[in-house]
Amino acid sequence: MFRVTISVGRNFKCGEKSFGSLESIINYGRLFSSQETRKTCLYDLHVEHQGKIVNFAGWLLPVQYREAIAASHQHTRTFASLFDVGHMLQTRVTGKDATELLESLTTSDLKNLSQGSAALTVFTQKNGGILDDLIITKEQEDKYFVVSNAGRRNEDSGLIKEKKDELKAKGKDINVEFLDPLEQGLVALQGPAAAGALQSLVKIDLSKLKFMNSIETEVLNDRIKISRCGYTGEDGFEISVSGRTAGDLVEKILENPDVKLAGLGARDSLRLEAGLCLYGHDIDEETTPVEAALTWLVAKRRRGEANFPGAEKILSQMKSGVTKKRVGLTMGQGPPAREGAAILTPEGERVGKVTSGGPSPTLGRPIAMGYVPPNLAQNGNGVLVEVRGKTYKATLTKMPFVKTNYYTNK
Image (cartoon, rainbow, N blue to C red):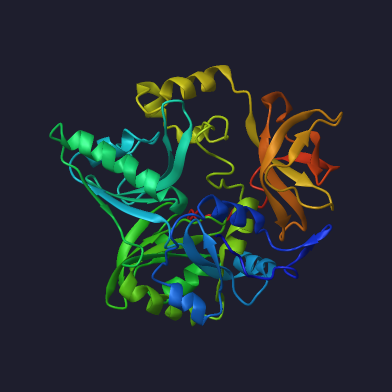
């Protein structure tokens, strides 16, 4: 059984409720509550630092620490926070035909991706639906590092393995290694103070590492992989580090007074403000990249070649349009609209639904994402959202809701 034994009643107030942006996390965890719970290599550290542990997609992870979720959220925006994301699936794909394998499953142009650069992309299926969103880093021409979602671990690993076996049977040179989360950790250091905190521990010049680029270096006598990316809209890094070193590295980073540990609650509210999708909610197997306002993930070369899964459906939608589109919603001072809440026209006609929503600590009002017909998807349009049997005014808003601060060295 999925259990949450935490108190969030005094995290922050928004309308009639006072709590952190937590509901989507709990609902997501319920989807996978039948799975045997697993731990990352930092589990003991979370307990030691009084993290409040929940079952998230089959993983025992902290939803928050001693601070309220809103306070942790604001600390990330102002200084820096450290998140354990070791539950994510880390995969190495190597070999002369590694590019062919990954391009056969995604919409990205990996052939023309420069070494050291990363690409956000999606696994798609024949009907154009999104199987998962992921980041692929091209370390060398024949070597890739892939990070995908924990809740899709079995599906993603099965998809990659099946394609590998198919290509190897044709004589292709491909090797795949799925990293054990107890042996290889992954932490996200996010916020405006992140670079300064990490720079003191490494010999490389982080000012030369731009957003969506990565580099390997040595820390605490161990090799680590630093990628300048994240899920908060802030500047920051994801650090892949061996399990034997992960705890020591985290403790070393926490010696900087600007850095605090943060949990799933703040991670969720931060990504919502950044307008970033949560798989299984804002995107899924029944949603295409075009409908999700992610058409930019379909690389120009791949559009021309039309050889990715679901190409016929996706390219047709790009030309002829869609019947629904992901939009941002900003509400007034009423209660937040949660997943599943109906979106209505000002006249009361139901035209869509919310897929993610909650209070915005930065804006001080509720925000949400959802899907509506494209003819209603213009920014500035007014709609109604139904929350617990009552309707509240909302405005379609350009995303991200809060300006992003990705580091481009410009």
